[in-house]
Image (tube, rainbow, N blue to C red; front, side, top):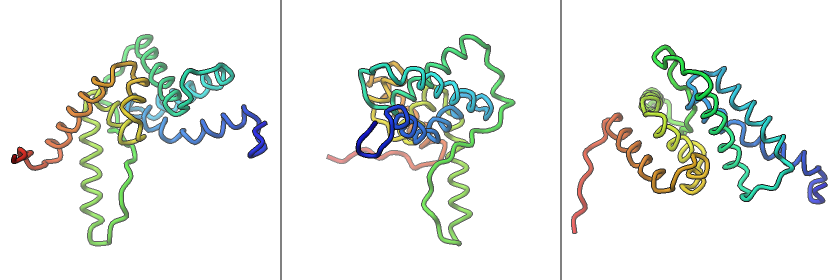
Length: 180
C-alpha cells in the first residue's frame, strides 16, 4: 500500500500507466496509421507492462518505459506480418493541441492544423516517431533514444530533418543566416 493515497502498488502502477493512455494511442496511430491496429498495439503494450510491473526496471520513467514497450511491439509486429499499403490508409488523425482562436481566426487555425497533420503524416516513419515523441509527448532526447533504441545524436538528427521537412511543407520563409 502507498500510505500517501491508500492504493496498492499494483493499483498505483495502473493509475500512472493509464495516465499515459492518450499519448500511447497517438503514438501508435502515428506508427500504424490504422485505428484498429493502434488500439491493438496499446492493448498489447498494457498487457506486457502489467505482466512486468513487479519486475524492477533500471529506469523509473514509466512513460518512457511504456513507449519503449509499444515501439518494440510495433517492430515485432512488422517483422511478423507484412505491412499493408499505406496509400489506402486514412490520413493520420493525431490530435495536436491548439490555442482556442477567436471566431475570425477559426477557419485559418483549422486550415493550419490540417496542413500540419498532413505534413506530419507525410514524414517517413523514423521522423514521424521522433516528432510525435518530442512534440506530442514532450519526451526528452534521452528518453526518445531509449524508446527507439538508438543514440541521442540520431534522435537529434531525425528531429532536425523532420523540422526542416515540416518547415518546407508548411511554406515557411527561408531561414536567414545569423549576422555576426
